[in-house]
Each structure stands twice: as C-alpha cells, then as structure tokens.
View (spheres, rainbow, N blue to C red):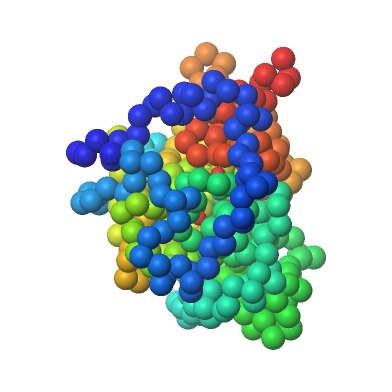
Length: 387
Ligand SMILES: C=C1C[C@]23C[C@@]1(O)CC[C@H]2[C@@]12CCC[C@@](C)(C(=O)O1)[C@H]2[C@@H]3C(=O)O
Ligand SMILES: O=C(O)CCC(=O)C(=O)O
Ligand SMILES: [Fe+2]
C-alpha cells in the first residue's frame, strides 16, 4: 500500500489536544474571496491552491473494493420473520466492523430516484448567480454552497451542494417544497415536490432500517423506530463537477457523518471511499441500491458498538458525479442516550455523555472543522464543560 493512502494518528491526536475553539478556521480579510464556479474553472489548466490537498490525504490509485453486505429488505419490509433475522444478523456484523451496508428491494420508487437525479442536473446546470438565490449563509447548514469557500481557506472540497431540512412532523408536510420555492421562486414548485417526496421516502426507509438496527442490537424493533419517527433531518444534493487535477483534490474530504444514519444514492460514476483496516476502499456504484452508513449520533445511541466510519469522495476529470444524501437526525429535544439494554456498569459502561442533536450540530458548525474524531472530541468537550 502506498504511504499516502494511510492516515496517521498524529493528526487526530493533535486535533484533540487543542481546545476546539482554536480549531475554527477564519478566512483572512485581506484575501479576495475565492469563488467556485465550475463553468469558469473548467477552462483553467491548474486548480486554485486552496483545492490542493496535502500529499498524505490525496486520493490513491487502485483502491480495493470494500466488501459490504447487500441486504435484501424485501422480506423484512413485508413482515417475514426469518428474513428479518437473517438481515439483522448481517447488518449487525457490518455495523460492528465499519458501519456501511447496501440495501436493495427497499420499496423506493425508481422513477422518484431518477427524477431526483434529473432535477439535480437542472439545478447545478444553472448559472452560479441563480443557484446563489438559495445561498447557504454563515453558521447555517442549509442552502446552496459552492465548495466551502466562505467557510474554510484550505483543503476545499471540489463540489457544490444544495441542502435543506426535512421534518417528519405532520404539520410540516410541505417543508422542503416551501423552502425551495421561497428561495428559488414559484417556478421551482415541481422541483420542490420531487425533493419533498424523495425526502419523505428516505424518512420512511430510515425508520424501517432503525427497526432492523434495533433487532440486530437486541433491543427490539420499536425502540429506535419510535425515537426517529418524528425525525428532523437534512437532505443534501452533492454535485461533483469534473476536475482537471483529480489526483490533487477531493470531492468530499475525510469525515464521519455526525448525524444518525445516512442513506446515499450515488449515480453510476463512482467515487465514494471508506477507510477500513488502515486503507481506503471504494464502494462501487449500484443504481438499485442505497448505501447506508451509521453516523456519530447512532454510534452514541448504540453505546459505541456500531461504528461511524471515516469516508470521503474522490472526483474524476471526465464526468460530473451526483449523490443524494439523506441524513437522519432526531427531533431537536430528544436526548441521545443508549437504551438500558446496551449499558451495563461493569461490562458495558456508558462511553458518551447525554446530548441533543442540536448541540452536536452546533459544535460541528461553529467550533470545529470536524473530520476524523468528531464524536470523541465533542464528548471530551462536553465532559470538560460539565466538570
Ligand atoms: C465537512 C463537514 C461538513 C459537515 C460537517 C463536516 O465536518 C462533516 C460532515 C458534514 C455534514 C453532513 C451532514 C449534514 C451536516 C450539516 C452535518 O452535520 O455534517 C454536514 C456538515 C456541513 O455541511 O456543514
Ligand atoms: O458523495 C458521496 O459519495 C459521499 C458524500 C458524503 O459523504 C456526505 O455528503 O456526507
Ligand atoms: Fe458523509
């Protein structure tokens, strides 16, 4: 394995040694703001230095494929007990190792998935000034972001994103459509409807997967299902334009999702990588499958037994890549603590303190450039604050 494919522990140890407030990165006032406009950048032979990643984090050639189980949800969703037991055992093994698995026969309409991809092409194909009608504002996590140019000044991701909030609360049945129309105009009504429907489908699927995770952890189907039934989640459209120097940059830098569960649909281009057994592995595209991964919040809910694993996305010089990510999050007031069945004072003591999702979200947004060990750093910070 090439040395640049390895991640040394030095970096994360250094991060943890400093108070999180020191890790906030500010843009220098005297710098001309950098703009990520793919329609302009594609005509340049070099890429701006802010997008060039350090050698030890650059993409590697010949990444091996990650062996992730393909879970057939068909039997489980239609109430077949044997299928449920089989699926929960396989999912449990994957979650203890790296937290990634694929689901097929998930019940989500293929036409809806295709529409969600098609409307992404329309949106990200708009001129920058039009996309900026939905500009993500400082300190917020929703809206349109062309890279993270306003937020960080180095190791910028080669991507554009459009993010919005989804709420499973009955009184918010058109929250996605209303938000997108309010930002982009009434002509985006159909666009908004597609992502409203898609987010709803993801919410339903994620609650189903929560039942499976509850079974696999031995706490029963109901516990996590009830915890997430009224979820207040985030939907993100990731668009990775082709890059003339794909070996120098990253589409999404190495990170663990701080959220609870991510359901990702990647197109046929490929680019998702996961860090397992000290090296990067790719997850091959499969249009019939969703890639599911455990996030930090669920790692805390499982008292550390299910892993939230480092992942990233690489880009290529030829083809734009798209992925649709639904980040499941609990309602704001829910206390994140593992069920009693997963805690034992002697054999399985609590690893993380109680917190709420807005606390962790604020931490990742305001105090820290979260990447490798967000949950651990956040947890140390909480414990230090309360002592
Ligand atoms: C680089 C990052 C952006 C992100 C926070 C993070 O440090 C790692 C994960 C990203 C993510 C994914 C889910 C939604 C989001 C708001 C979050 O909590 O974690 C985003 C963060 C972001 O875009 O600011
Ligand atoms: O695009 C991908 O494959 C990964 C995106 C991702 O990890 C994220 O948005 O959190
Ligand atoms: Fe992610």
